[in-house]
Length: 72
Image (cartoon, rainbow, N blue to C red; front, side, top):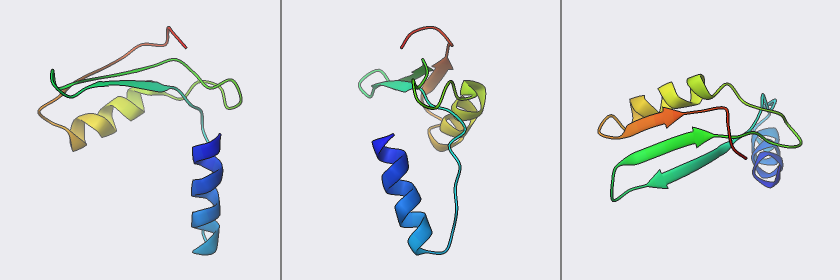
């Protein structure tokens, strides 16, 4: 929620609006080049982790990027 509020304020200053579609967590292991997307946000619910994963794969093509709905 803290990150969303800060980002929403920054975007509003530029005349833009945003909406949070859900949340989750990331486990980043740079030494192994692995990112795992999982869990949910108590306040915003669960994001579509498949979308997040595809965006991360595009940005970090040399990483193994996985996701699961389990966990918090």
